[in-house]
Length: 180
Image (cartoon, rainbow, N blue to C red; front, side, top):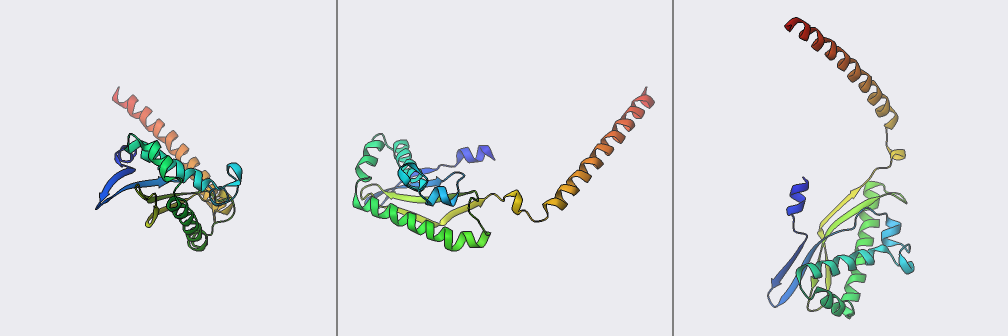
């Protein structure tokens, strides 16, 4: 699977008519709602913007020799500021209104978003593609239903495996003796 992931291009530069669009497969990494949307980051800003701007800047640099200059130009445009704020609000609303209730997420739960964003390089406008969004979350052990029963079953199976290994070793030893 790691080999397949290496072949997946996470950034593409596309020509769409008269505009150039950078398509980015953006991964937030493991995070929590408080860190991604709350005021925990540097200067009391959500990590969302740091992660998003880093992905855009890095992707521009990866695809264009003057990528850092292009990012410096577009990050100061009204279209960029407005569209990134809009993406933040839309993803936040989607997360709290749809995802959190569906998966019964609580404060501090860990998750990761993988989504597609598009950057109009000439206008500086950033667009979120919600239909291309994947959501992964980690279930905390204290919320795992039936964990005690599973732990007991796991212990029972471990003992059974050890018993079978011992029996197999005896059978191999007898077989070895018989073959000599």
